[in-house]
Length: 258
Image (cartoon, rainbow, N blue to C red):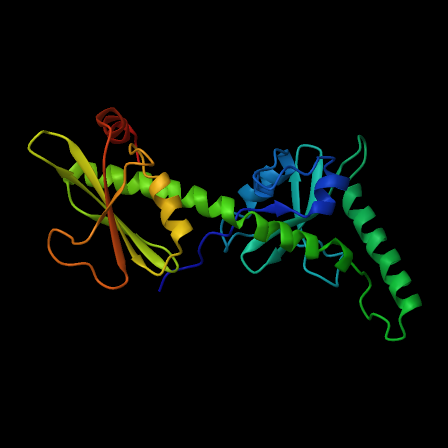
């Protein structure tokens, strides 16, 4: 049985990014887990593995928050399944202890008092920190970044497959959630290198275009459909395309360490 795996990259809530870290919200093409800040980098390092050991903020009892410390920065991290969220952060002032955590506790107690004053079913916990956790805008932002994450994964996968097939001439494949990709080089008598792409599964036409556009070393408008594979006919859920691969690009792919 395999052990716990890696967590997804840590990211700040939009409130924390703007108010606590003092950073502007970047365009959706820049995922928030790549925001440049020392405390976020520390969160990513500290929460890289699911079975890592973390120190809980004991003064907060309504949610499980963990401490993160780097330089003069202090932070509070909440784990949502396999994703660490930086939900609050602040700087430790010179000559003081961990005042950020004292302030976090005071804010939680004040929020709890306000909640109980406005609701008949008062909270039994000493603190209330739900307002710090990821809100709807955070989940909307994460879903909006999904396209960027997919394109990056697709490009890296195509580069890996091209590197592998250029080394041995065999077909190499990779499984995605709803389809599989296969790449194989074919050399003709004129010493030109053709690259064949096989897509298995149900994919919309715009995804096929995206895949072919990102194959390294091939012109985007140079693809031709194939109606059979060298060993067999295509299956109903398969499509195949071929293109001439630029030799300089092929050499560069081979030179790169994968």
